[in-house]
Amino acid sequence: MEKITIRSDRDTDYTFLYKGEETVLKAGQIIGISNGLEDVVLPTTLMKISNNLIVIKEST
Image 1 (cartoon, helix red, strand yellow):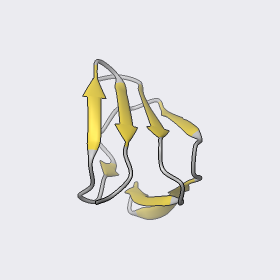
Image 2 (image 1 turned 90 degrees about the vertical axis):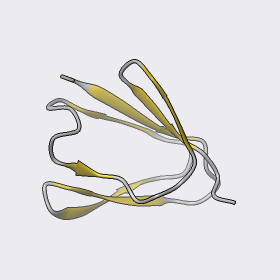
Image 3 (image 1 turned 60 degrees about the vertical axis):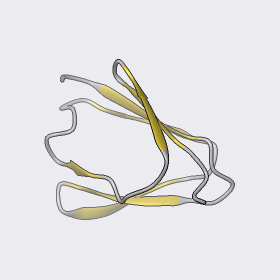
Image 4 (image 1 turned 120 degrees about the vertical axis):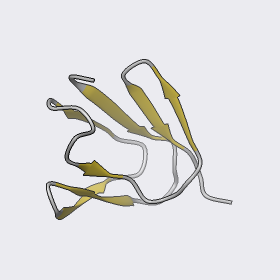
């Protein structure tokens, strides 16, 4: 997968690892990652994946 977009539908910030460093996706924001998921580690949470879009949902 080449470029991906991660969108937050959460009311709180979401922290994940990108290239070994903590990256914060602010609540309700969108981030684009040009080299796909190769260097991304997403903590377990509810998410919806559609083509190159990952939507981070509120945790239960």
